Amino acid sequence: MRFLAVLLLAASLAGCSASRDERGPSLASAPAQPLAALPQEVPVRAYAAFVMDARTGKVLHDTAGRSPRYPASLTKMMTLYMVFEKLEAGAWTTRTALPVSEEAASRPPSKLGVRAGEAITVDIAIRALAVRSANDVSVVVAEAISGSEEAFAAAMTRKARALGMMQTNFANASGLPDPRQVTTARDIAILGKALSKKFPRWYAYFSTPSVTYGRRTWQNTNRLLATVDGMDGIKTGYIRASGYNLCASVRRGGRHIIAVVIGGRSGADRNRRMEALIKEYLPKSSGGGLLANLF
Image (cartoon, rainbow, N blue to C red; front, side, top):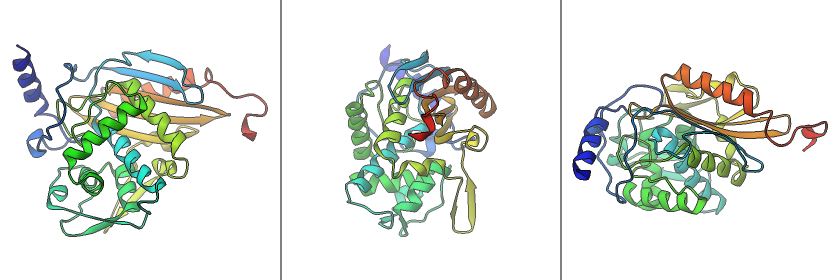
């Protein structure tokens, strides 16, 4: 029965679209990457929300925050975490050239449109992931760090465990549909907090308004960056099995929260839910006071 359930789940995911807030190709376009044992079954398009005080780690709100969900392109938060580690270690600079393989170039949208045999800089790769949510660039990064996307996904999962993301399993670097690609709203909040605290030099990439490559320019998929005071990231995500996802970081008046919404019915619905969480829980986080803006 368990094997049959997995087959049925995989079949339903095959109708899912690619990452980002757009509909895209089916799972058939994205070859599965074998990794770890299959996680528990995941409800499709189920809502979850989690809000954390980024200064103290205190949980301010939790709606199904520990229930399994599909991360979609929230996956790229971990892909970028691995890039930032390379930069911090001095192994890469933002000018380091990353080669593009046929495997990377073949990934379905959302994508930057890199071509096999070319190379892109780390700077462009980061912008492409943070702004465009580019699936082709996810594979470029994965292959440059670990040799293959499969090995990179295993490294991502190990890093997740080290950060305390105990319910997260990665099967690819992009968030394209895969029944083994599972996380929780709580785990994503942990990752968001880690990114904002560990990489202050590189974290500003998440608020980049646009990215230009070739003759095309794309705007950041997180529209709330332009409308919510103090929002400085982090990442949107969408596949049909997950619904519309967003991990947000907001700093205002000396306060800082990480908020996660998974399973929005639309981009607008997700954004409304996120704005409501920010309005209610940012004032309840630590900090603030007369001297808050001095620190």
